[in-house]
Length: 109
Image (cartoon, rainbow, N blue to C red; front, side, top):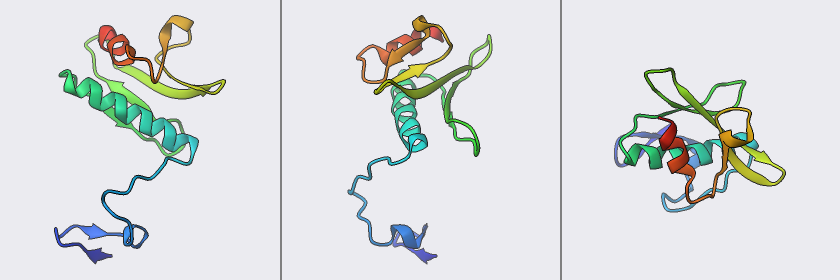
C-alpha cells in the first residue's frame, strides 16, 4: 500500500480515482448500504446515535439503540421501489425517497 499525502494508506484499487468522483453502487448489498447510510446521517443530524451493521453473510441493517431494545431498519427493493422496513406489516415500511422517511423512523425512537 502506498501512503497518501495525509499519511493514510491508499489501496491500489483507489490509486487512480479522484476524491470528487462518485461511484454508483453496483450490488444489491451496496445499494442497501448506500440507502441505510443516507438514513443514518439524517437521523444522526437529529441527535440520534445510530450504527450501520454490515455483516459478512446477511443484509446490512441500521441499528438505532432504544431503552426498549434496538430498532433494526433494513432497506430492500420491493417490486422496483426501494423501501425501509423495520417489521413485516405494511405500516412498518416507508419508501426510501419519501420526504417523511426519516420522520417515520424518528417517531419510533
